[in-house]
Amino acid sequence: MNANRVSAEQLNAIKERAEKVTLGPWELDTDDNGIWNKGGKNYLGQVTLSTADAKFIAASREDIPQLVAEVERLRDGIETIQERLFSVRGLNGTHDGEITGACIAIRKLLEGDDVD
Image 1 (cartoon, helix red, strand yellow):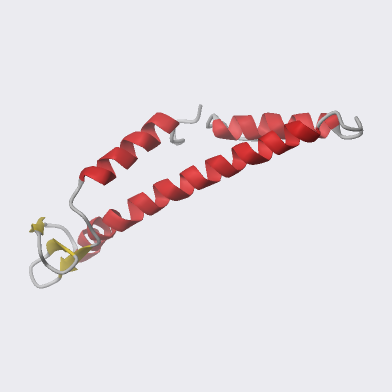
Image 2 (cartoon, helix red, strand yellow):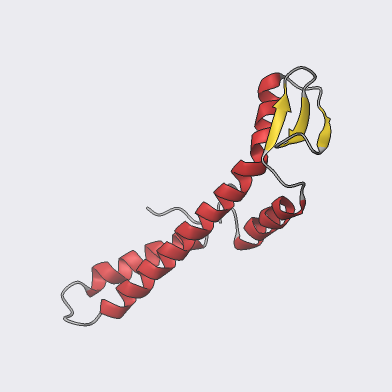
């Protein structure tokens, strides 16, 4: 497995951390580099970072859950495609080798490996 890949366990841990933080979206108060949840009801803290870094942190409250949802959607889609390919394999025997190869490539992707 490639070290840069995110396993299902890692993705679930990211999702759990994102679900436990203060509700968002978060906003940056550029006057004092303070981060608030939208509407200014909860002050999350002042940061001693560049404005770009502080904006990145504030945006992460919305970005992380969106990215997790997209990864889950894509993984589910890949599994569905693999199931469909397996269901047509052997119907006429013409492309069984290609279908098997595609299924192997899909499995490698799902397991975090690169496809050649």
